Length: 287
Image (cartoon, rainbow, N blue to C red; front, side, top):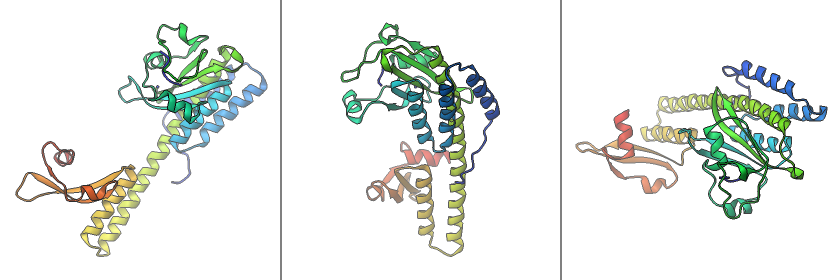
């Protein structure tokens, strides 16, 4: 869907989680559909809450949303830090060839941007009838009906769920909107839980790395070995392509990269950089 016209295995409990769960219960009680649909909604709420890896949580949310409201296409857009565009866009319903034909992922214009600017549920029988719609890129499948809802985490909009093409040619109805809004509340709880879990895992990895470096120093390992361990551990924990260590060159205003680990490490070792105007020099001034 493109722009038409956002360690331990224990599950941490974050702030306001109980309040969010109460809201979720209230929304579930408003669904007046068949028993099967209510069951499917409850199952969906449990499903999105089982994952602890954030990327898997996001994928599971949009996959579940498509099934719940019987949509042919679905997407989840994550809103950027600037709050004006999309930084991530996960899709369901289009194969790799279709995605490749469409080209660059949407950034949040048109109907998609409408939910960024106005984070409230939006339901349309015909996308092209909305003033914010300005068409689809070449290679994009036709889409008519639309349903979008925001996902909030800690009272801040994290992203939006976008569903299009209700199967059978019908339009999305008010109950579809209620069901999707309920899933969005569950999604907010799951995203917050995954974030807390990842934060706990990251803290644990830093503690383990610190202990490993301490053991290396106490055991009499060479300084170079300890420094390499520090850089390697930091690169792994931060999931960086490259980790490098630069030291000041005595009697000059320059730095030299004495250690590099990861992508193109060989090309970076030995580089001489100015203290002023370089990324590493900037880091030294802030330390």
